[in-house]
Amino acid sequence: MAAGHAFLAIWHDIETGETQAFERWHTREHMPERIGIPGFLAARRYVNWSLPKHGCFTLYDGAHIETFRSPGYLARLNDPTEWSKRMHPVFRNFIRGACVVTAGMGDGVGGACSTYRLTLDASRRDDVMRVCAGALYDIAAIDGVISVRLGSNVADVTSVRTKETELKGPNREDVFDAVVIVEGLGLDELGAARERVLAALRTEGLLDIEAADYRLSQLLSHAR
Image (tube, rainbow, N blue to C red; front, side):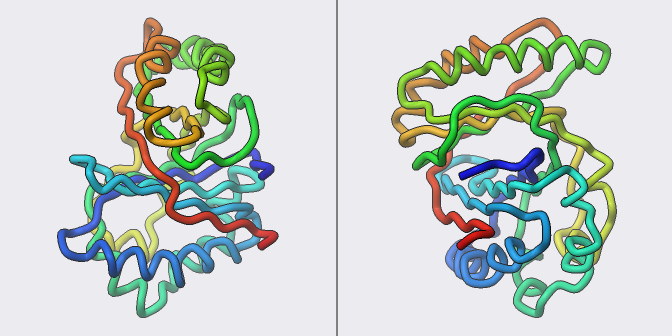
């Protein structure tokens, strides 16, 4: 599957007892709706409900960064369906970031993925991003890894307030500077790769890394 030049990354939890209702809505309405917006190339939902926080990760590939503040997308965000109005209030710990793809290696979609959210020293951002981009060569060579990419969060793209975001209540959309997404064969392989990935990324100016592993739950593409 060909990726675009940007992606929208979303992490969140769901209120206790609402997981099945969320997955039904997300599968039958929300993801098909999103993939119908011009510029949205692919949609993937990953889950790991055993995590203490951020049990769901959704990834939307976009043709370019402006996809995620385009008139078509904003129109949907400002006119949520009745089903969406019922579901958005059960979201918890919501994080969303629109990212420009700055580097990538490999191709394909694995049965699982790992996300590594990065917090950077602003004064060293460019240097850290160069090191992380170079680290993708080592990460891509790890057994069980299918592909890896680095995205730089463009915070002002998702800072626009809409009716849909208001339904979720207060959320922090500036909580990461960049993210590395590692596609792998499965959860076991990605778990085994964790320490090597962290070692490859660590550098002066990289203040924090939040890592989590997820299994693929649903995939839709524009050409379905």
